[in-house]
Image (cartoon, rainbow, N blue to C red; front, side, top):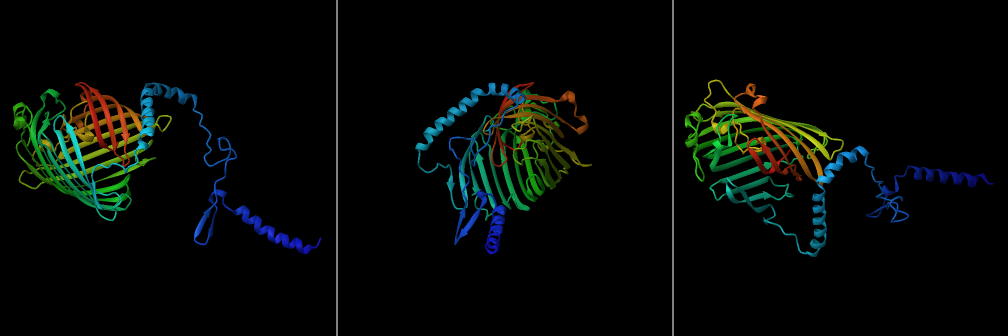
Amino acid sequence: MNPRPRRLAWLVALPLSFAIASAPPARAQEARFGDSTWVAPYPIATESGDPTTDGPRVSRRDREPVGETILRTPFRAVFYPVRLLARGVERVADKVLPQFKGPPIRLGFYTEVAKLTPTIAYSSDTGIEPGFEIQRRSFREDVPNIRIAGGWSTKGQRDAMARVHSGLDTTMWGVGAEARYKIVPNFRFYGIGNDAPEGAHSIYRDERGDISVFMRVGPDPLHRARFLAGYSSISSAGGSHGSPALQDVFDPTTVPFFGHDSKVFYFGAGGDFALVNHWREPAYGVHLRGDVRHFESSDRTNVKYLELRGDVRGYLPVFATRRILALRLLYDGVNPDGGSAPIPFYRLPASYGEYRFLAYHSNQFRDQVLGIAHVEYRWVITRGLQAVAIAQLGEVAPNAKSLRIADIHESYGIGLRFPLKKGTVVRGIAAQGSEGPQFLLIAGSDF
């Protein structure tokens, strides 16, 4: 055979074989023709109905271990009716909703920059409270984030707030300002100290306003520092829209600053540090949060004190990430400076909001130090909806050394937990304590 054709064949075959060997997989190959791009298709299954053949969506079914089945069986049995209800709702929705071909229904009024949304709230203390909220459209990141809200209840409660924030959650820094005003004519007061029975409650008129500026540093919500400064004014007086009045149950001389206002400037810093597997719904890891603020009166009341807040969270999966053991320790304490006047009773740490004792009324306990130990077991029912079992210990005291195990208030409960997209959570809880059951609907928590 002529050696020249052999040499030509090798010269052609070697570059061709090298190109074939070094080419990316078929599903990632691209070739450009003029201004268009062609992407090679995925391999086509030889038999479309056979999941064992090669194809883009082949995945063998996981085999559940025997131990896993034993652990899940009791929960499956208890929540089987809930799953049936959820499946029934899904099937009805699939059949009914596609019949509506019109545009989606939106509550509120929209412009190019902001949206106006009517709101309504209700509680036994405040009555029905209609209100509104004006907020920047989520896609208008070219303008500062503005939020304005307000409401007026049938029992005289009025509140308003305005907040402007520049900087995104993904940027290194952000600055903003916030103003709040709220008046509650029947704010509940149970006394100062750890012994505050439900039957001793009274009411007073609480009016407060706050203006603050803040700055945050850090693009990650879990690794971020915060700095703030502001001005706060709070006053108290006899209440209305309820009974009995504070002065009819307690000696006003034992309630510091009842009937008087206090005006203070404050400044402080805080931050978050976390090592978790997910920023919004962690399954394992720890999250530390803390704040320290200094308050000093701007009038002649001579109120000076330091407030320290701590929040320690821990997450541990129980054999699977759909079952989580979540632990939380909360601390809020104020320490008056030397020569300071007594801290006004309405500025003391209270069992309210994140610091509420679940089986007791909101604001039922207040003193210079408040501590909570909280543990809950979470397990997924369906599509993000979780069931929770909760145990909580809470106590207040005049100082940290006075906290005693024998004086704690216990709360035990069960409920449902539904995480929202932006890290907030909606909870429905039935809790039991020494004063009977409490049924709570909590929105806005991030735990």
